Length: 429
Image (cartoon, rainbow, N blue to C red):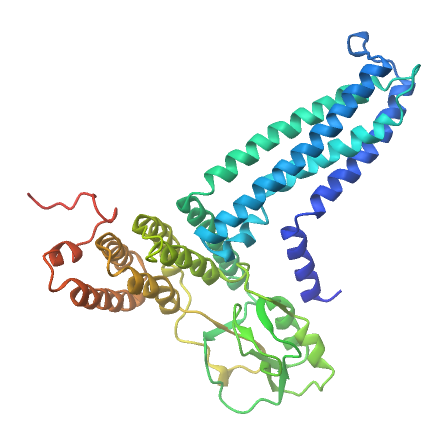
């Protein structure tokens, strides 16, 4: 199995809605057979003994209840998906698909169904699986409890601020993983994207099909580069959509021949869209989408945009305090190894601020919170990155003057407020 196929398989299993419930159903069937055999060879307390008619009635009720609850869970999930895609961003659904509570409740309920249905076949007039009947009722109770937990989580996660918090958490996790990879002794060299290496490559590996780069096996490519005495230069960062036939990898130094093309391509995982793994900027993209959708005239909810800016600020602070060189790698001094294009601080900042400023300049609440975020970042990021923050503050000043310069609220729009409107400003009335 190639690395890219393994990555896609792991991601599919994490996002699949049927694999864990199927496992639950198989375990329920197996446990039903084992419980029936155990009941036939062991004595159970007389307090929990059942007649054959009672056992059949209990198991039939459990089967019907578990099937009904599965249908109700699916209905609630469909409503959640519909509301989330209309209110937030369709890209957020990749996180919802990984909700363990949703998969757990389906697995327990389907397992309860298969367990009870299997056990019904072993109910006889003179041989009742008392232990299994009691266990079926307990499993149904567990399913009900998990359903309540799932419903509680789902309702609370329908709030925009909860969605922004989940996306920001996923972005921070992806950023920590990227930083851990960059801290390895054999970490690849990084350069700004796009870039132009010096000299001509001895070989260019091209895409055989179109797709978004979801992940890259940096360690595998680095080992291959050293083993083959080549300089492997990736032309696109994680998150780029690359067309079929476009250049994917350039090789410098020794030409390994055409047989290396497939091996190198197998170290790059492609998909129909971006994922947050190895791509913290995609988390920023999702949060910005939620904010600008809230700022649309059809919704007109600037408070949601302000709450998104709260979590954007936290993620941007983490990026801004990351000590990665912004100068690029001296490719002419490298003979072997791996060179990867990455996003810089300015790229993250532009992605986070530009569209919210563009669509939110008509809301005093948004421009005040945006100013507070930029002022905070100018004090907390690394010194070399403050200039980019100051440039964004200048753009915000120009946008405020253009929108509010001829109105009586120009003084209000020009202040900073971490709550948008209503926070302590420190000025005397």
